[in-house]
Length: 107
Image (tube, rainbow, N blue to C red):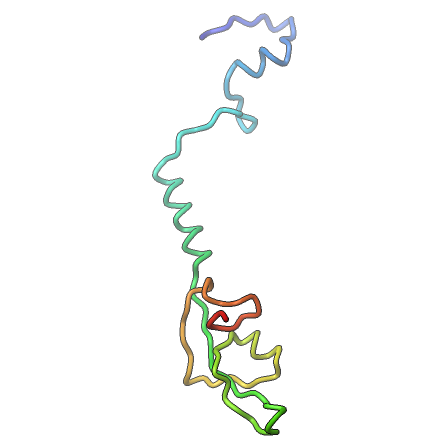
């Protein structure tokens, strides 16, 4: 629909909104293109990235000895519990498999 506009008269806001897209303030939805879908898939794959986890040596207070933990943890999680990581036990896992403290597997 084409609307003839006299520039000397200001249009009410309701009519201005219905005239169509005006650059950055467009309220009309544009169709999703294949580029948009590719960018979305890339964002999803970044969220589901892999992370390295390690077995670690920790102090057991009940036996007063260093023991190898049965669980795996990220380097940050191991550092928080004052453990030492074992480099040879490195595994790459999906970040969704970690618990909130950075340990694997979830209990």
